[in-house]
Image (cartoon, rainbow, N blue to C red; front, side):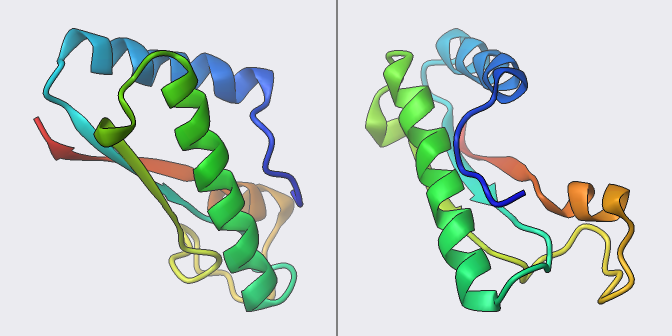
Length: 105
């Protein structure tokens, strides 16, 4: 919540993505970063863009060509769990996520 840095747990997962991209040199990925619905829509859009950028920079730092990965923030616009204002902490956590879309293989 309210952070865009790469945690140890996230780095572990992102390293799996890097490994997959190293195994398939043609794979191109788009990162879709999402937030929960706490905070304003504009704040969440900015936060998700920061998260997408941090993710892309991490992957590039692992020697993946920048042409092979892009990122976009979606804020709270595409919740995984549409719980409106009655979200549990677990539902908020599910909505705070990054998705990896294979654009080209």
